[in-house]
Image (cartoon, rainbow, N blue to C red; front, side):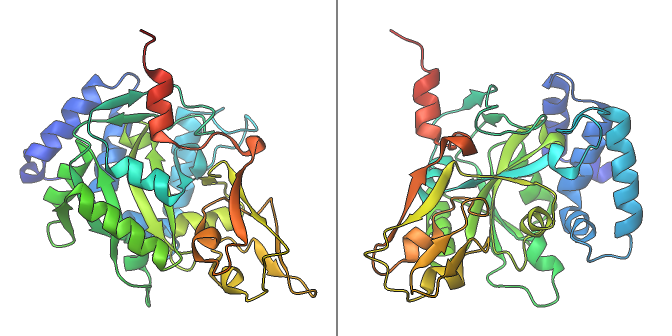
Length: 312
């Protein structure tokens, strides 16, 4: 349990106040949210299997989920981590929208965008408060990809909580700096995910910018725990323009692209999450993202705001 000095920190008090205002948020959720934010490096290290306590904690976690939400998962019988902790793959443009919001936002009906039963709200308070944090997933690895400072926490009370509790690993940045980080991430061929967590009031709270070799969520998704939702797009290749250079194949974080014997890239539409890395890096302009309505709606913040605006 946190000690008294931790409990009286301003960011902790703000976190508790927000918890009290959140309908259905229990004391268990509060403790879980505090532990996740306060000890995120240990939390992720356990979650990614890099800690000796992983088996015990996973067993206890499944027990608690069953007690609190016995029918939360898609098959109504087996709750999984993805029910309360998951990400939405976003394009570079969509990620930029999330870090350049100029107003508070409250969106609570996002089932078509975030297809999970629990955490799927976008409630941004002070969205210009952005903190970049050393990636807990990368920090848990023996030989991580660099740089480490690629995770963005957005809005309150989350940004201040992370900054106050991890001063050696986090720093506040401007929206312009955040956009720069997102661009650099894409130039490295890595993927941006908008993350949602039940213990974080069921809301969007961060953008993870990572790679399949380090990201715990991407590895869990690949191993059968559906922690990531598609962007709503799928990559398509114009065969006449493809030169078979293989650049996109080597960069695809989801293993969705292969180079066929006839020298043209083939897309596995099921594996493709529509991140847009291949489109961004194709030197011949042979790949584009196309809307796939079977994969849910994109997290297009500008469009969502427009759709929710009252008719005049």
